[in-house]
Length: 304
Image (cartoon, rainbow, N blue to C red; front, side, top):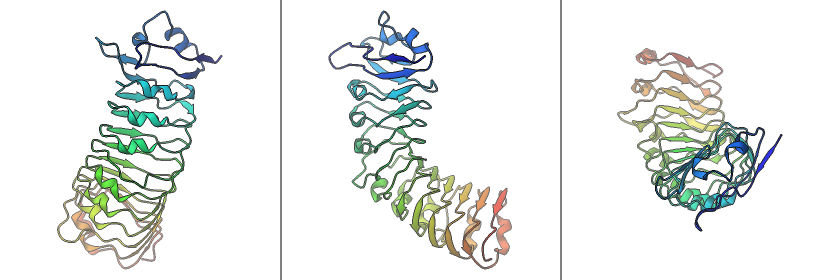
């Protein structure tokens, strides 16, 4: 039996917590009642003294309905976690204007429409996770200003457009995942300026051009996954000494040509190397054994 919950709470003028949620069980209906304080409801966290909503966490409950634009009235909201549900409709534009918002995690739903441009201009947001939805439209081409952003996960949607050079403004970015979309154009060299980046997932898109050599000189980078694109040119590692802790390098199913560079030996921490299904020629470097920590190496289906 579907339970319909709407306009559950009205407190102060600046907080109007309204939602339209369908629950396949009576769990929320029995817990979210008008006879109890909304601060005692399951998934709701409030400030002790002022009773302002600071977190709304309702993951893994098979909830249906929409994400109400009224949530944008929760001016003290810091965490919104609705992952692993069945919400439909768009992402309210006003969420990007919540001044205290730190985490927005609504991955694995059925959301559609475009990503609000306001999210790319949020000064305090640290986590934006929208993966595994049905979001479309172009990536924001205009300037990004997200100085506190650590995690940006848009994987497995239907996003188009390019990765703009202004991604370099996300100076604290650690995890960047755009895999499973239709992103085109080049990998901007500006990603090489993200000095705290640890994981970069861009596989299964429509990227073209060279792999920026600067990616191999991000000392914090552990995972570089670029498979299933149309990247071309040689696999050029950063000229000179490489300061790399890269453990996972995957460029399989592209159009990479040339030979395996001899300075690949400078990737001393590498455990997985996947370069199958490219146009790599020449012999395997004799000193490939220098990769003493290598556990898996996939080089098949090349002209080598």
